[in-house]
Image (cartoon, rainbow, N blue to C red; front, top):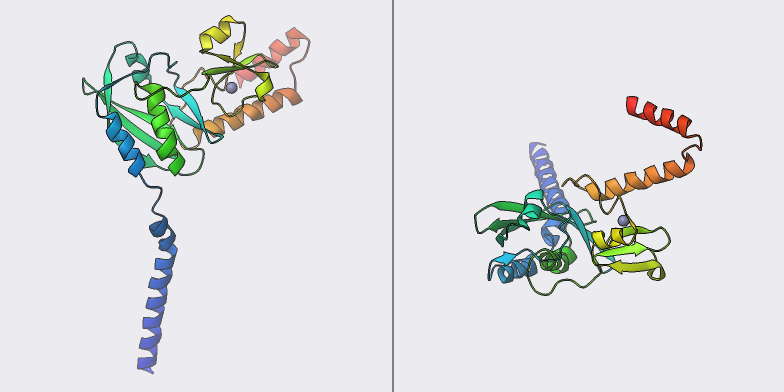
Length: 244
Ligand SMILES: [Zn+2]
């Protein structure tokens, strides 16, 4: 009887261990995408100190389109200010966390800053590591040839100026390309509030998709409940909104 119990217990232990191993195995086998290519890119970049790329608009949030998918990258305010100081950079380290590739750069004066590259998927993909990462570096720094796409695209129907690689560009027949936001505005176009947000985006998981979804919901709300024609009435409604 005792021996029987012992055997049953051992079997339970073996089963539990085995099922735990099974549960864990997918991540062990997958191990995430390889960083080999990204490390090579980093080494190439570090062959010399790199200046910031002239002609980049240095927006807090920019996008690059690769294989039809828009990837966002975030530049810290300090780095944007350094565009004027002529600082040069090297990459100190790269690290992935959830859907973000954090690229820590260091200046010749030893200041450290982080560039975040966002994957629209839940986790950093091999496309981001192999293709988007070098493109972002080429876009921000004097590293290789700059990516070839228009920085700003105006939708001829709405008159809105979007970032060249945002995720809501119109059909090809409705696009006019501009070098930057200033020239698009000078030609009488309005800047898209989602591509050129007045507030810098925050490096939280899925911040940009969530923000875009909220903006879209607000746009639909405004369509369903358009402002009333009576300006006085509209103003009083607006005031109510500010009170609450
Ligand atoms: Zn836009």
